[in-house]
Length: 88
View 1: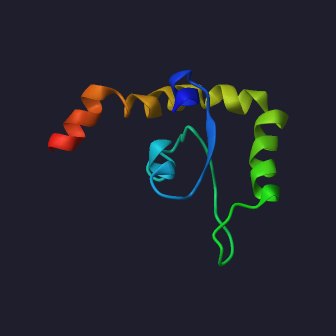
View 2: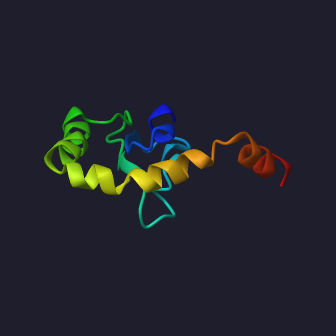
View 3: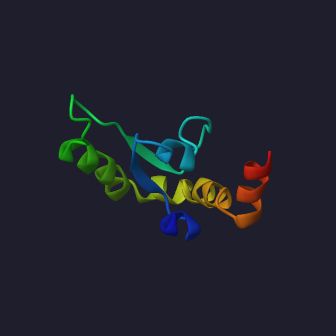
């Protein structure tokens, strides 16, 4: 969440609400990448994580283009937004 607050895209696993947090499931412009868990143990492979990281390193413009989506994703954690969802 701290990176999203600074409008920085993130890399998350597909566990729990992480994909939702960056709008990966419903937004054409997610705030980063989701690295899927693999195998019976449900772990993220170092290779998959490194590949996602490499995308940002190899293409700084990509990271820059995701900054608005990162800021939008962070707004979901605003107290007012959270209370609205809680009371809905």
